[in-house]
Length: 189
Image (cartoon, rainbow, N blue to C red; front, side, top):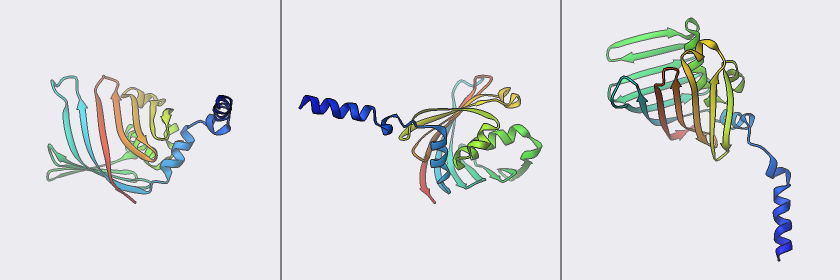
């Protein structure tokens, strides 16, 4: 019985499937299958000048490849809509619109989210060095800015998830402040 168990163990260890690595391309292919969905979020911002973190919550919706909406419900209502090259912010009765092409750093932030959600490795690699840890069931994608304008603002962006679902997005800013958004999918398309 022992020789059989030993040979079975060896065959598993040295089979191609055992050595097949989980890589960024595989993650991006998996994420690219996601065409959109709705989720709830809780975002916690750790800001050095404040004694306590700022917590907000609300809803997210995404339609591939470039429409994203963040609707904050608590503590104050706010809606951010990213549609192609346009970011619209609604706060109370005021609305602000920004064309991303006028602000390259805004493009990089938008692309970090949309590029991840759409599985667009090429877009991500234009601004970030990518590092993947974990496996398909529990992964973390680290994005380290390679663009100097972004690197002056952001130390890193970490996106964690399982399979084709993004569950956490964390921004660590150059000044040490950070934001952690926990995402819970409510449906997918």
